[in-house]
Image (cartoon, rainbow, N blue to C red; front, side):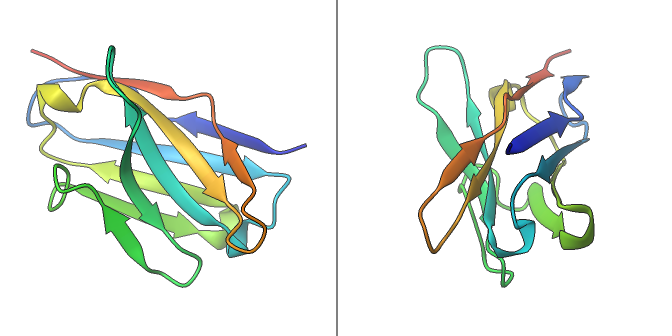
Length: 117
């Protein structure tokens, strides 16, 4: 059974930092492209950042220079370091795992990030 379990969400003041973690189980983590998406109320789900198995990354223009995605294959975990948070970063953040060979996609349940003073 595949599980993606996010942690690290919460309430933070503007300008603050948070680190999200997504622990995966039930997949061959090292071959998967891992990503973070977010969905704010009334808005479509959008890509935040992705990281392939060979280290290639892509991120939304709105988070470039502030958010960093990384992975620890030994721990089957992907991280999202978020700095200089803004109120517009408020959303549910979801972990995503995609098998680049089969196209299989898995989602975590999401973790809420609220940026507010």
